[in-house]
Image (cartoon, rainbow, N blue to C red; front, side, top):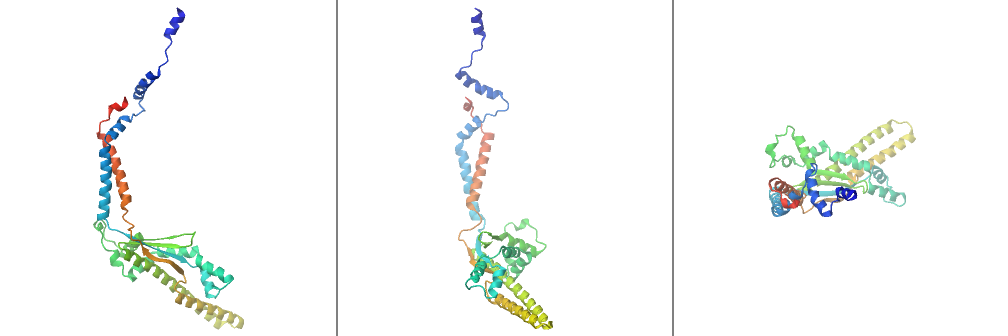
Length: 309
């Protein structure tokens, strides 16, 4: 009798069916657990409005961006700087020959990172951009009011307004791997993008040529004055040899078109606009529309109670 009484008081293990019935009750009693199944069921039941809002947001955005926003085209150009050592070797007549001249020719093709960094600094410089705009009469075009110009006050200094406008459209990158300098410019037409990017290349070449001629002229005057005042005939002869090299350096800068850098790919603009990006804007709008639709359904829709059973 005692054994039967002990067996009757021992708790009976729960059966699998009972465990499955008690599990939702335990989850409901737990304050830290949030049962999302009713809301997921509500979203599943209302998938058609969510899909309609998502598609409608993408279509409206793509149509608005395509029709209302102006198209911008990007022109690209590739140049390769020529190292200073290669220019000096070319002046000395060592480039283009055999043996050591071949190595100098290779150096002229690969260029130098120092020259490229200098060109990048010049192209992004304030004075260079303002002078470019004035020289090619781009001031009126750059200061032309846009659609949202009423939100901005009149610039106090037109030069800085011109500089900021050019820097928004221009960019250049130097590749250490290839040794090339890639120049980019954006405009509202392909012709304008190619034309203004050509101005950057031509003005940079002219600036480097003018500086080279000025430095060579100054060196020639200094060496000639030193040679005239020197009483040593041997030193005088050496100085005149240096004068001859500087004269050749000056003539090379005046005559050769690519003494500072070589244009590998002239400015060319793609027939596809770079901005606005209709596909990307439509995808972003569709994602935002989907999230807003899900939030509204989850906030205003009634959860499906049958999902917890």
